[in-house]
Image 1 (tube, rainbow, N blue to C red):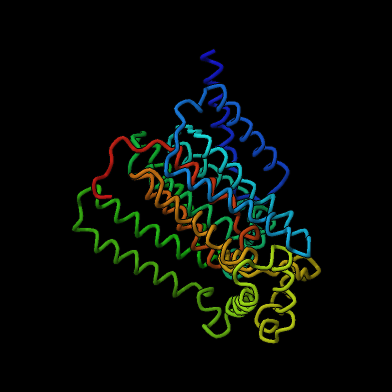
Image 2 (cartoon, rainbow, N blue to C red):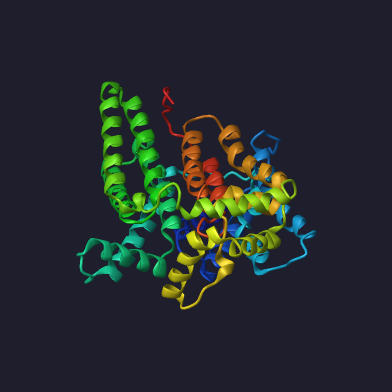
Length: 417
């Protein structure tokens, strides 16, 4: 019986790690099968190993209440939405992790895992992405570099996912690797392997055309430098290192044409957000509902001259080049906050903000809370410029919250954190 309990626990762990491994790739039926296997493994482990014993209410369970409330808000608001489009069905599926993690968290399920498992799983996934890209880019001429980078973007989109999705995953992987380098007692050669993988991740993010991913990476390394020197006691080197990181970030910003592609007056997102704000102003409290909000956003955008000039025209060119047709239904607010406000109103936005803030406030105090906060920072920075369910997978928020809640704290806590 003891062996059977251990096997069920390992099956649950394997399911969690498999979901983490597949997160950056485009959604396929394989993802659905793996998520079903993961949930089934946790369900069996919960009852076989009697995780319900000793259950009691703790403040952190409000996190999971918020997850459930956010998901339930989608079908509840749909009851008063006169439209029912493909978008609501897609949303309900892409947000499924919220009720699942919500119920798992409320049940008191706690699988203690090591951060090393998370870091090495995500690092392996990054290596696989690198190998896939190398396979498709072998033989393509390196010069001119702009053409090579454009080809890299197209290959990534065709065989992996968008640069937003991949960069978010890479940055979260960097956070997990930083935990291992700072607090793990694993062998030094394993830390060396992770450091090499981290260097490869840095290069891949810099080669992408994801500006927010690059800015986020610089912020993470600034935080990592503070933690590193605080732990090592060599604080006299902290200011020079931070200055050097800022200088390197400035150089990367200067040489990257993507940062100078638009001015503050012709950036397409300014006009996209302007239309989204107009939609919000008409129904600010309860929103339009998922289907009607998108329909209203598209109709207003297509009838706005500035929106068409700065956003739709470029979208039409790119869509025809990639797909041979234009799908106007793919237009979205490019902000998870504006999108949530459009769809669910101020009420839904408040619940969503609770999902982001409560994990940082109510998670167990210690080093892990800081690293969970860093993962949520990565998510929020990209979410400022991307909509949930488009090129920002909403399941990352509850999954990373749950994973860090299950992660064993480091044996030696850093008193400076």
